[in-house]
Image 1 (cartoon, one colour):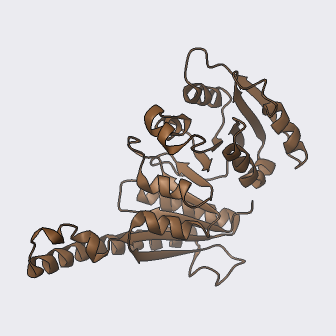
Image 2 (image 1 turned 90 degrees about the vertical axis):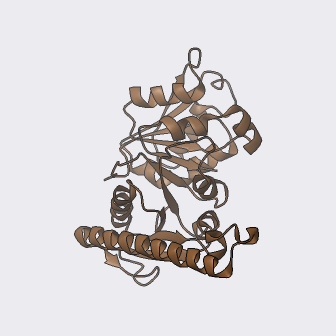
Image 3 (image 1 turned 60 degrees about the vertical axis):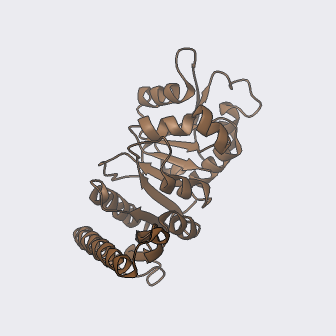
Length: 287
């Protein structure tokens, strides 16, 4: 898939600058448009306890104070965004204005952050998110990006700035629909990579749709890939998968995200959750 539009939902945090630098660099590399999206709460969200006897005057005071704080955050982030764009020499304008040139825009929207991510994410080629600090429960913004958009989600390790698309790529294969979608979504990246591995657990190596079959499929798309089977005798699938990517010196991992139901992931955990918490390389998830 050609990447021509990128979405970065942003909030004021210790990783905001590194995320914006990564996103701008990616837009330049792909001659794409980047939307950095900051979402402010609506008045109703600012005063969720309005029905508990808060006076109108107090309600207005709370909303005004919260609005001032949110506006200050937005202005500060936009100032940092402009500085990064200026240093990297990328045009600042709205989507579609110069489709043949890399460009970026800073959007300030009002509403529920998860809903804005789900809505705006559906018309973008790639969504960037930071690696979460906690996965129990999974961050709602990550879930919205992955479950509600149908688009690839690139999870960037905290404070890490990505300067290229990755040279040694690993596909975590489990024969699921999500894994197949992930392979299709990153075909362009696979063609440009120096090395591609298709990793599968020893429990799946005899499946009809195993890693060797994936490699044969990729050959039809002019992608040379090597199947690799990893053992899960001593560790979980997630642990074993990350250990193998480290052993092979991979700098990107591509997987189908949340291949199991939401309930099974909540109760039993899963590979997605383990990768979110423990991966030290960028991961592209597709659901």
